[in-house]
Amino acid sequence: MQTVRATLVAAAAAVALVVSSLAVSAGENNSKLALTISVDGAIGPSTARYVKDALTKASERHAEVVVLRMNTPGGLSTSMREIIADVLASRVPVVGYVAPSGAHAASAGTYILYATHIAAMAPGTNLGAATPVQIGGPLPGLPDATPDKSAKDKKDGGDQQPKTKDAMAAKATNDAVALIRSLAEMRGRNADWAEKAVREAASLSANAALQANVIDLVARDPADLLRQIDGRTVEVAGGETRQLATRDAAREAIDPGLLSRFLRVITDPNVAFILMLVGIYGLIFELSSPGAVAPGVIGTICLLLGLYALICCPSTMRASA
Image (cartoon, rainbow, N blue to C red; front, side, top):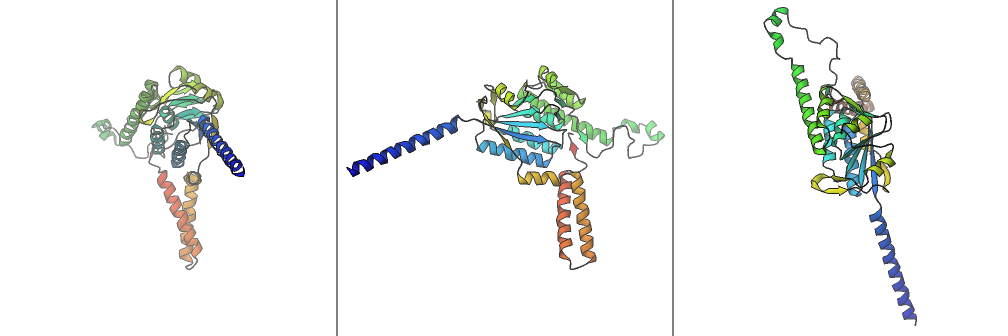
């Protein structure tokens, strides 16, 4: 009798365990996850690292969609291209969203928005002005740093040869046009306006962008965005077609990692120059007072960090800001 009772108890426990496991598994399969990446401020190496890590995490967690919320004036073209490459290679659909109201996706933000699978904007936002500019170059309207040629050289035809900086500007502009047109053609968006945004620094409001087929929709808030994209079909990396089911998706924000936040701090030009100054004075103090180890060590570390920050943001690099 006791053996039968023990067997029944064991069988009941096994059945309960199986049922609970199936329920948990079904709950996990039915739950949809929408992860949010927030890009605020200028785009640089730290932003590219943050987006890359976030997309990797989204893939590992099998997220239904990633919302890339942007409010940026632009940034470095190298970091912008890294983000675009990661978005294009993502197997999780990426929704570009310019928000909140009053935000903008200027310059590099426009290229990234064109690269996303679905492009959206909140009311009262704008995008465009995507002309490449030279960081640290002469301001428009100011005289060049190099003296002009003599009148005789100009008369002999010296002014017919394009200046080096003009050739570089044309080269960067044409390269940017080719990039944004290829993104527009890939996503089925307005390629002519994209070229105009690069060559003429054109900009559009949210409603105008929707009418011009630059974006796919206008959404008031993240909840409205998820409702509107529910049921849409997108093609992700590898040619796989995905139908989005985001109406009841749980929203979760992905914060930048420690390394991304550290890079963002030290790649700020003001912080970089302060690190350089601290490093130089630390080495001077060490040389003037041999044996004091701390100033030399601190100075060397600060100098290396400052040099790395300046390498990440060189003054001669072409940018999309």
